[in-house]
Image (cartoon, helix red, strand yellow):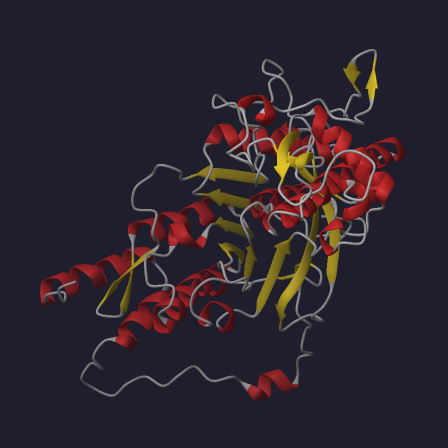
Length: 455
């Protein structure tokens, strides 16, 4: 990028004046050449005044997790429901309702997404309101939602030779905050709003300070949603993302959880709270809920669905591990030395599931077409044998005849009247192995995917 000319600098400074942020203008002016004349000193604390005033503890929007008038970084992998969390927290604050069991400050909230369109916002808001038992009309003037998806120029700043320059979108954000009177701002997400190099410490820090200028000038609380990286860190890019903020919350799936819809919210960095605090909850029917908020029947159904999904996944993981080990390590569907459920029990991939549970998983996977039997020639025994493979896996013995390759009926699959035993019904927001709803029930998008399936 070419350096700005003197005229462009004057135009840029005019833009800074229009933005109306003294702290932003001061930061930019300080980063440029020191003007002639005696510089102004930093504003110093008045200790004489402080001596007669009692210091106040840090306020929280969401006690223990989101400090007030600060910038909190909310991170998590794709599908961890960061967006759902942001929109639901904004709704809880606007309605004055607890968020996942924690009382929150009753403030006007603004949720801005650059990833979802208005139809998705509407869909999610309808389900969040249903989960919270709050009429959507009651939130008029208290909750503000905006979609920037498809809008060009969503970046809040640009960089000229390492110097930050706020964009018109930053001015629009500031004006929107002032007009709505919002005190909680949730920005989803950083990759759409930050145009700099995420690995450049200086650019990351100045971007964070730009957002802090809103906290300082307008007295607002900001949550910036961001993705984790592929290496498993709780943020992506320079360590400045974490070092420049005073608070970080992390949304993720609990490690080794059987239920894929379990979630945990924890403190990644906490200058104003005790690190290690966490909340466990679940994604259910396109909203976030504590298990205690569900009925006994729903909890029982979800537990059953999670156990089924977990056993299915464990069986497939064991099958892949054994088949990857090569000839002689395959397992079969019939009782005997190589009976799959017996061989799988005790494997690390079995996740503690017992033989009976793995046998039921095998029957279900047969019924859904996820696995099949295949006849191959055993050169050691010099006779054919039947093994189990995943349905989409290539044949293990290309030398056998077509008849030998054809899938066979499971030798011990549970049947009733010639039909496979039913699996289990679809529960919105339940285990990912559950069957998806049929077309026409209003739950699928034009591409045939469940709305909000991943985030």
